[in-house]
Length: 333
Image (cartoon, rainbow, N blue to C red; front, side, top):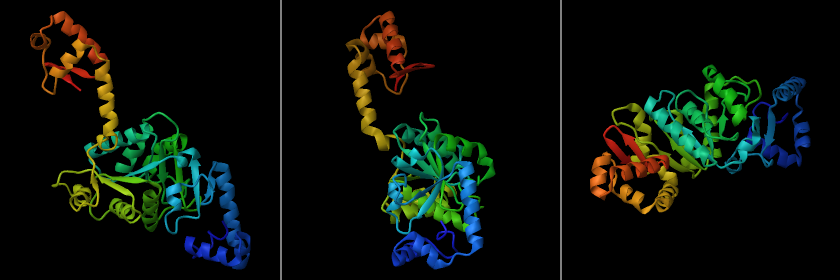
């Protein structure tokens, strides 16, 4: 830590010094670190211990595997929460702080689906889209659902409005940072934060975003790193559509229409299995239902069954979640 907390020492310089002197201890000794830096590091380590914060080196098994492959990745990250979250496959989900209600709802539902499929959802804990992604993931069962990458110290809650979200993440996920414990974020830190979001993820989903935004910067990092990039389309009259729509238009990002883009075959198999489990009479009703509601009496005429038989079969199908009752009758799901 003494080397990394020395001014003008980043990952590249760190690797160079350690290689030159053969060990971390010898490299630290060569720098002649002054007492002020030593005292600062001691205070930081003491604070981290009191807050239950763990330092993870890039040669540790807990270090995110994808991030380790990124050039000039952080040598050490600090983490607070359930460290096992860092072992999971990860999907990055980002977008504007000023997202529409519909945009946040879509992102939250998609994040919930990813978390339910054993992915850790990675984002930056900003307001708007980031928060929706984290909260959506936290709706899924389990205690390793989401990773928040911060621009400041891992203990510094920013924005302050997300204090309750931060608390839930460290309870059922993990918060990480490359910055010192207690460090207050500045603007330039968020660009690097965005790079690590892209680095940790195996794929990135971009929601609503202006052309000149941090989320688009994250998307560019994802492209440079060879990550799979998806973008959710938005209404062209809204400036928040310009980021994702432009990436879809030029073929840089894949069009994201929802969970079926990622688990379409699984859903199809589930439907087919359910249908095979139905009786012949129930399947006959299913074949006649679609998106236009049909009443019990109309169904009885079509399949040539009595009303009582139709009602019995519809109750069974509704309990199985393959049909739904609406005002004008029944539709197939």
